[in-house]
Figure 1 (tube, rainbow, N blue to C red):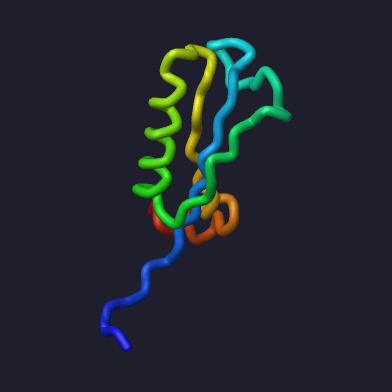
Figure 2 (figure 1 turned 180 degrees about the horizontal axis):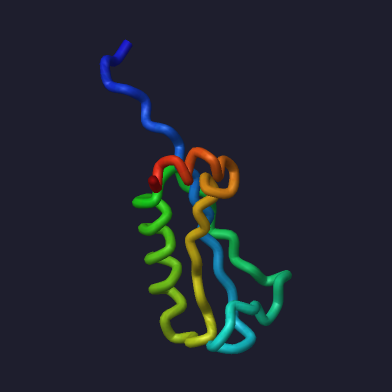
Length: 83
């Protein structure tokens, strides 16, 4: 057994798609959203986001996002952490 405390999973979703307009976050075709994956921490999610964003750099309408799933799954814990 290890003496170091286990880190809590802070799940993050990385996804993207082509926007209808650059001014809004409204996707052109929801059926064509690219679900990159779910990651156990922000650093992993950021690396995946950056890789996908760089692959689509030639398409100005294409955007990728990181969603903090842990904040949606347990908002009370997340709010306590911010205080």
